[in-house]
Image (cartoon, rainbow, N blue to C red; front, top):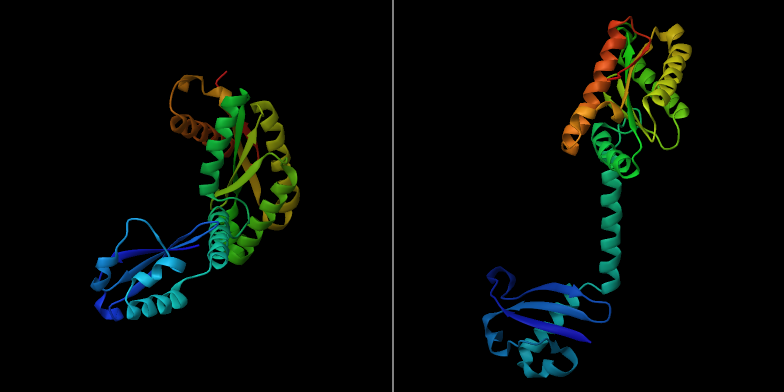
Length: 265
């Protein structure tokens, strides 16, 4: 069945008529016809069956309606294909927006989303969430002496190295510049520190001799934030990042190329 809706309207620059599809259901098509003011006498509260009710209109209007329908109405299958294609494109754009294009790991936006998801999981399962902050030592000297192209390659190689060391449930992000962040669900501070040491050793073994680059790493977990119990998720997450960053600073201050663990106990 074809349903026809009539709405009084006037569009001067379109010869007095304009058509747009109203929507497509699984078993029928509904159309919105915007026509000249002389269709106002034929307005119906219920949709009109094109097979039966089209004859109610003057001959010249019937002809115009048929012409407009043929020209402007999109078949339901085409509309469904366009909607599916649009959804796929939006999904792909969302993924791209979460990726650091240089290193092909998550970006800071991705980190924010993952922090919220993993924190919710930690609360639900009552298991700790650990976070690792990594800063590459002497990276600026690589850019200054060897050029930014070499610096970019170092970042790419380090990201690839980290992805090969972390576990399947862990997520890595490039926090910015030469800083990386790794989230470790269901992992306490001791377990996170062991993994952090593997990351540090990996950078030392693969980057020190050729590029002079090492890694300073700070580690903490959600158990350390007893003082924020009852606070909002946003406050908790900010504090978690702050503590990991403080641990990273301690590693830098302590001589670099080391892992520092923030513990409130």
